[in-house]
Image (spheres, helix red, strand yellow):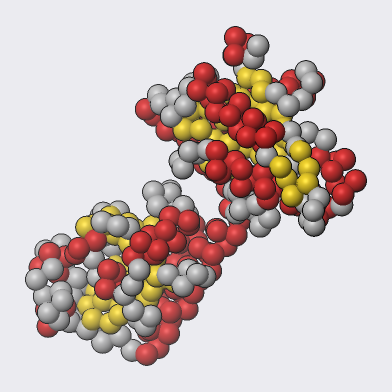
Amino acid sequence: MDDEARLAALGRLEILETPPEELFENVVNLVRTVLAVPIATVSLVDRNRQWLKAQRGLNVNETSRSVSFCTHTIQQREPLIVEDAHLDERFATNPLVLGGPRIRSYAGVPLRTPDGYNVGSLCAMDTKPRRFSPADIAILSNFANVVSDELELRMIARSDYLTGALTRRGFEEELQREFDRHARYHRPASVVFLDIDHFKSINDTHGHPAGDQVLRQLADVARATLRPNDVLGRLGGEEFGVLLPETGAQDGFVAAERLRCALQKHTFAIGGLQTLKVTASLGVSSVAGHMSAGNWLAEADQELYRAKAEGRNCTRMTDLRMAS
């Protein structure tokens, strides 16, 4: 098993540390009821831990990976069945077996991503020895398919098909998460709203396929220019957002200008031997405690329109001292 590639697949889901969600909660409730087990979990196996997206019958949200049954489940394609943990040398001395919650029997079905990686499992556990019937495993497998489908839909919903950037929904989720982090820890952050100048004329003159090429290459230039932890989103049409964690007002303006200059220097290939030079206008806003996440993005949008009104191919931000 290529665990680094598997962890990358888990990372792409952007699900770790997310709050409870109704579908996953419903699944573990149903597993516990239908299979008549005291414990059911949606488990995701990170590098050093098992994190529970949903759980019933446990009083923890994570355990060490080294003691998790699911670490063994993700190493195979078929469900893992343990009828009596006391008689299984892999688990007989496991602290989750000898101590609370005193797992005695286990059935887990791998949660497989579309690109073929087992990122976790759907588990049913009992505190007494048990033989899980073929019908039990079929039911658990069907519920696991529901969970895997939901994970795939999350990826589709968060990723723009054309550019690979986050969708507006995905970007706004990241923006809210960063805003909440600022509210809790008072860490700086900035957001950039970017719009391609005269994009309609590119489509009108060269056709929509050329416009699509420009959008794809803009995303590529942005990813090459930004830091690994910066977040790129396509907010609609030719509009993009960039979230800059741990970045105050001055550094946010500098980062936006660096991106603007990289786009201005780039030669966009639009098919055959045709090329274009493209510019963009950018607005920047740094987070402040008095605003909401929505106000934060709207403030950057207002600065973007100011950049367009003042001649395009420039960056403007809410701090007037930085906009000169």
